[in-house]
Length: 145
Image (tube, rainbow, N blue to C red):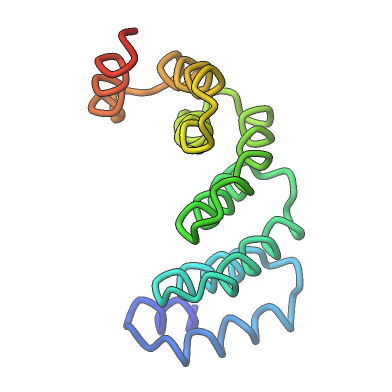
C-alpha cells in the first residue's frame, strides 16, 4: 500500500524502492512488477519497463491482460515487431478482448502485412464494445468494411 501511495503521490524513487521490497518478500506479486513498468514507461526507461512487464508475465503467464500490457510497452518502445507473438497469444487466451486484435492490426500494418492486419481488424470489429465506437468507425471507413 505504501508503494502505491508513493507512486500516486509522485514520489517515484520511494515507490520504486517500496515495490522492489514487495518483490523481494513475495516473488509472485506480479502487480509490483506492473507498477514498476508504469513508472519506468513514464520515465522513458523502456528496457527497464519491458523487463518488468516480462517479469510480471513470468509470474502470471496465463493472464492475457499482462500479454497486452507487455505488447503495448514493446510498441511504445519502438519494438513493435516483437509485440506480434504476445498479442496473438493474448487473442487466443481471451478471444473476446478487443484491444489485442486492435493492437495486432496496428503492428501488422506497420510490418506491411496488410492482409493479416485486415484480418486482425475484422476480429477487433467483431468483438469491440461500444467504448471503441470511434476506432470502429475509423477502421470501417478506412478499410471499407
